[in-house]
Image (tube, rainbow, N blue to C red):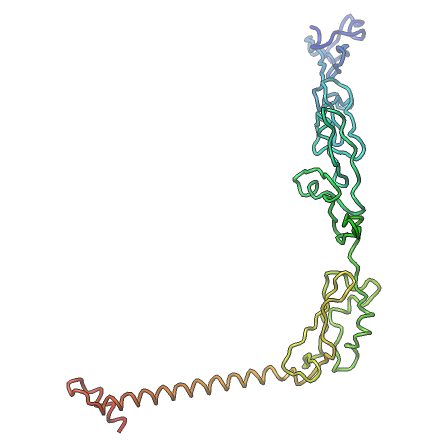
Length: 319
């Protein structure tokens, strides 16, 4: 039998006998490719198979079969021609694309308008440095239409814009804070026991500094607590926070470590407990006096004897 979509070519025709286990390659029709050769097995001939790949597919010579067009390519017609690469700056979102319209501007480019009437897609324009199209990154697969669709991506989250048009020019990384220089100027830390100690800030007193958005904390030695000058009642903040090269949160000037501030909270607690207990006893005594006065007035106003012995008991207690 002749192979489907082909014929026995010269190689097969030249063989008078095809022995069991032998193969020969038939000649496939135009735009068809050989997938499997004709094979003789135990006296039976299995004709070869020719294939023609559909749109979005091309013939893989190594696999001898049709394969989907890879990313960044498309193929509109059936046949075994190779897939066509998308224009520069464009990409497909899935393998097996069959139309040029499947070629979209990639995540780092945008396109203000598309071709009309089936023409080739217009070229994409690149986003500013370190910016990408959000719609191509978050899974919505929305192509960028202007530079306004270009958004800064980590770690380059700080936009640099045109002062006149506010158009995005580039994206830069946030600037760390030179913590060592700041601490020297603030004069809050030192080896003395009454000064603030480095705490977790010790990890950032180096050339890299304190990263933007990162905070560290100064500490006091044991049995000492932070205090601002002579103010014993306030609880000063010990955290240092950096935002794009600027220290935006820090301990107040004049913060030091005091033993009195460390002792004050338990003293205040005891005072509060004592005052609370005293107020409770005072209120109980007032209620007792009020009750006795009410009973006395009731007895003086006269209560029927049939009301029972409870009032007699109260009267005797008051007497």
